[in-house]
Image 1: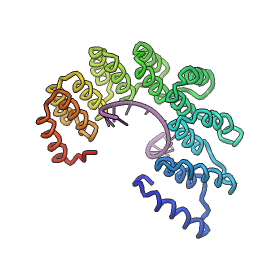
Image 2 (image 1 turned 180 degrees about the horizontal axis):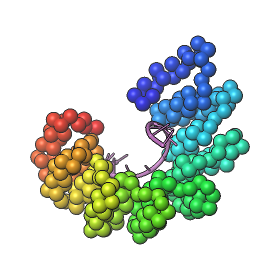
Image 3 (image 1 turned 120 degrees about the vertical axis):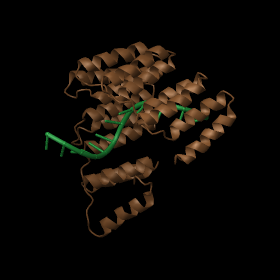
Length: 269
RNA sequence: CGCGCCUUUUUCA
């Protein structure tokens, strides 16, 4: 499934049932996950139905996987319906369930409802975790609400949810989108002081920003530097550098970066 | 106790 060999995965699934190996909940979860990643939501849903017909109970994982897909597809009503009914199906929502539904609501522009679920989480025993905060911080950042994003960063720490690399990446990205470069750079320093190592995504965020600002020289410098800090440039890194160079009219340099990308064994997409 | 899994962040469209 992770190799994208969907047909083979499905075939194996058919073979196992034909051989009398009964698929269990985990098997079904895996198949449903694979199908959804392959864009075959229709087959996934029929598999879900088949699962229940065969008295193989879905669990919270099954529902979480489906909820994530429904959210990505902006099928908000269906997601909310599943969220409502899953308890009756014997699946207790957990923190991941809430995170998933919140993320889906935010994607669909239902910020108000997402925030009310978040408060519901705080009141019940589905304690928000780092992922919950990361999700909300990303949404605030995308909407230019950097103040709220920074507030959540404070709040999560005080609640014992430690910010991780993704948290800092998310906050930094939001600040840069809002034109608050200095604050972003200060958070970049802070994250390292707090023992959160920057990763490839951190550098991708900074490099993309530098490129958009026309600071192509700095972008190229950071490309050098990230390697010395143990972060390997990936396709997105090179795409960002190349995009910045092209915007700045440095086509020749862009082409040589493209060459270098392939020399470094990084495949263009 | 340890590990894995489902949910969150980055480029271009």
